[in-house]
Image 1 (cartoon, one colour):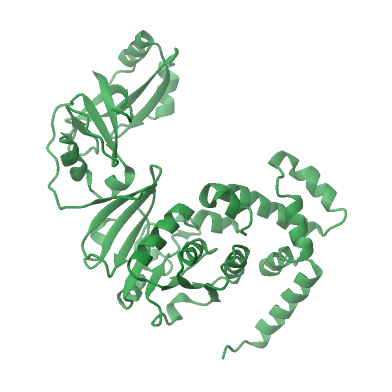
Image 2 (cartoon, one colour):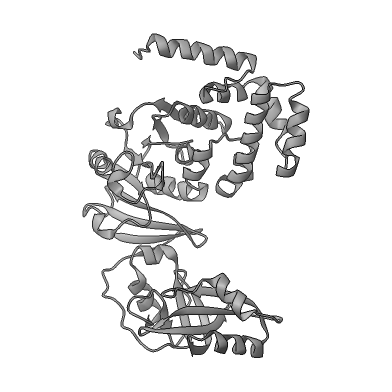
Length: 419
């Protein structure tokens, strides 16, 4: 039986009263959120759904004539967050879901969460304890895959938002949201554990895994107690910090690295890079570092997940290439070989680093659209564009990099996908 203190019971009654009246307690974010779920709150959410930033003041002034000012402000804030969330959740879901400022930033992109949920189901998982669930993005993806979810977070407002999202998307029967300290939750009755520790503090991002909340060491211990587990970590985690009994996976979506995940109960020691959409997964084979060689006709830029996973050697072997420099993740080859794990460019010119020579070449080629990529160079792309002043109808890509340690510029263009 759950027991609540008199203080918690009084707070619950206060929230219920405020929600029933559609009022907002400016000093209690949970009560303010509850007011948004009332008939009046939902009316206001509909009223401000399509409001553009330039219209907010006029709309707020009009609505405040008949509704509590704080509730109007809360509805406008939700509308703003819903618009921001479209990129992560899509317009259909974002328009029905609820958010907090931190919740949007920390939530998993829907495509990535759906891929992870699919992996869980392929492993035979039918129930997951989602620890540090946030606003419920991963729980939603798991439930849509038919998985029963216990979603746990210690923040009352976050739990209320996660519960509202489960209900809004018709998944309340599969998602049980619980306000608790994740370190005190019994997960023994679940097929798997998913932990997404907080990686932000009062001063921004946290890079030390032991400074996560909860620490990575606790999350690993919890994972080892479960038949299956996945721990979401920062993509920049040092490889030496990865436990030997974990599979490490780096995931990118449309070319952007989104996360790294440690899997337990799968293939210990495996390293893989997964690219979405797809998915396409490149598995590590423990290859030695590629040889450094002179620039060939083609340059390959590996996907960020491939680089983070230290699988550039696998790409180099696939395309029959080598490295331009032993410290730079650019692969060069004499022939073009299609691969989903790197973008190929045909190189037309190689110059020692010189803005004067680059400007002259771009003027000769009438290049007005210049894409600047760099690795191993201190020059900023915008600074370079400003100095060379590209003009003309043509386009080109310039790579600012090193070739056997020497600052170099390689000019070319992407290889057509139909080659």
